Image (cartoon, rainbow, N blue to C red; front, side):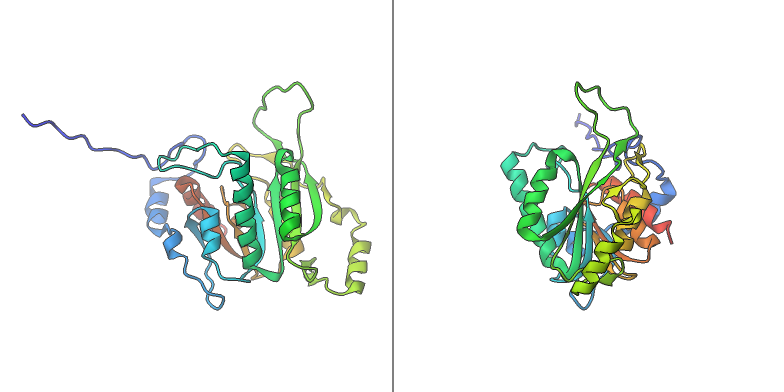
Length: 278
């Protein structure tokens, strides 16, 4: 009697109760056929295209043309390497440093001369990013905001962290800020004078600090970045998209968005969230 063969079942959602809420069968029927991967990134400087792509950030960046992006807004992963089974592999500190060098190099290449980069990170790696950004970009400031997790945090023997860092760096001194190019000395002096107001301090106490259970950050955080450093119809890129927060804010603010994500579940959810902004 021949042995019966068992059909292998690979679930679409690896963690449906925690990471990918709000997706129905109707949503899957709508968004699964629209999934695109790195092979479909075929842009030129004269023919750019909005979209979300199932690919890692470094690979996606390598496929974008030079000087094509106005603003990069991203929160890099602390462990970017995944194997075919989807389980994370540990990285050495040297590997992680070199990986960050590579994607920052590519970000510099794809940014326009007037472009900027906002890099969100925790205090543990903030010093490393300051050094890396200084090698590639002109670091303008470090922003501090209330980044308090809504989930119960583990008990620690010292001070509990409730802030996050955002490094703002530019490709040149001829960058966009407050919806205008500050490329003249008179402009810079005016900007410095205006920055004394509460709304332009690098201590963002006006941002709601709760991150929800799905890991989504407040929309006002991204809207404030987009309002300060981009025009309408500018190209915004998030190479490590996660829940699509930057994409949702970009659509809401009238910017054109490109996002990369390696997790299919999160990519589908991002597609739905951004689509619902229309």
